[in-house]
Amino acid sequence: MTEMKNIKASDLFVRALENEGVEFIFGVPGEENLDLLESLRTSTITLILTRHEQGAGFMAATYGRLTGKPGVCLATLGPGATNFVTPAAYAQLGAMPMVMITGQKPIKQSKQGKFQIVDVVGLMKPITKFSRQIVGPNVIPGLVREAFRLAAEERPGAVLLELPEDIAAEVAPEAHLFPVNPPCRPLVSDNSLERVAERIRQAKMPLILVGAGANRKRTIEPVQHLVEKTGIPFFNTQMGKGVISGYHEHYMGTAALSSGDYLHCAIDRADLVINVGHDDVEKPPFIMENGGKEVIHINFLSAEVDEVYFPQYELVGDVADTVQRLAELLDPVPTHDFDYFRRMREMVLEHMVESNDNSAYPMIPQRIVADVRKVMPSDGIIALDNGMYKIWFARNYRAEEPNTVLLDNALATMGAGLPSAMMAALLYPERRVMAICGDGGFMMNSQEMETAVRLGLNLVVVVLRDNSYGMIRWKQAVSEFADWGLEFGNPDFVTYANSYGASGHRVEATAEMVGLLEECFTAGGVHLVEVPVDYSENKRVLIDELAARICLI
Image (cartoon, rainbow, N blue to C red):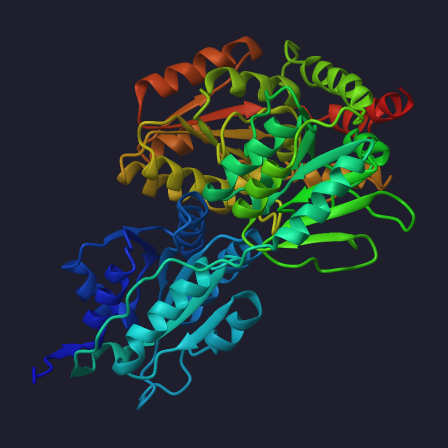
């Protein structure tokens, strides 16, 4: 019989992380993490030190989004752990697999009373899939395996493991690690598929919706195949952008607004919506009514029925397999009538480019979107923070490949754009990566510019300056309230970037934008480009004269 060797709990924990294939841990360690930090020092895992726990959490969540494997982040107890609340909600609502590791004071004995002690496990339970304290070395292999399994399992999300200081330092017999097995996904029955296929054949004007749940590596090709095989027009939600190219001949656009958008004209005309992977954390792209259109719900989980979404047909199971098998049952249907959709598409595409050459300064959003599109190749990645510009990019920026537009339309938090872009630049150093932030959102985690420089990333950060919280100011105007309480001052962004060792630039004339961005990408390194923006177009264009025209054709 082989004698078990003793091992420190923190070493066992790190071995369990290595067993899960962890490449990076992003974080801000504290006193309670020192044993774990020492164990990481000699591991195969790279520690990425950030300047704030939010930055670490957003990077970990984006790693999960881009790779499908849980990203890992680390913080200490108390204020370090509470700074993970926003990234936890970001990953949970956005279906991004992420594992948070936090420290805690000794649980067997303590000489510091309640100093810095918060019930982090209880705090995180409402916004995670799994939140657990580790109470002894022997449970580490099982809890780590369970945490990673749950984080990645559909629907993906955030989990928390709390490793107290005394448990991390404890020595105990080495425990066996658990094998990492591929997930088993349920499959839809043949009868259910044939029933849905027959309903699609009977439809007059079907329309495909591509949602966030379709934006998974395994699902992308089958969804593209469904559109190609049937010729049915499609549109996408904001988080479904890029699953199928925005330049595809059947692309109708992106649902950027929850009401009053031109896409609602098409949705209103459709008699059947094939809803692939829509996640109801996004604003509903359409509202169902009794006696109105029918909806086919294709997703990993059954629909959460409410007063605006009650699908008549459901295909619940592995989406990739479901869509692939459904496509094989279908061919183009001669009785389908897409004439209205084709005419609408022409008007939408004309509308999307009508102000691309506008030379006004400060720049209008349409010109900014067009100029960014010019410098980004098909595999280039833009990471959007949250603000008024996000709607413009969602509408007008035509993504060519999956996960080349990283935006958050679930929690819709500010401050995530820069860390998300940093993660993309770290994973894909050969691709062009750009963060696009408003001045408000950028300043919430702007300290991570130092992290980006220290990591030697190639990254362009565009900061759109309007000296206010522009989206709320727009909604204030739409609601006919007084323009009050939402303006602020800013640093000199060029000097600010230079102080971190990055290169700061300012667009002084609209014609400079494309050339300046090209110079930044060619030079390499971290660049910040300040762009003054004029949002006076918001009310005229977004509350939407085009919708009225399209609905009448």
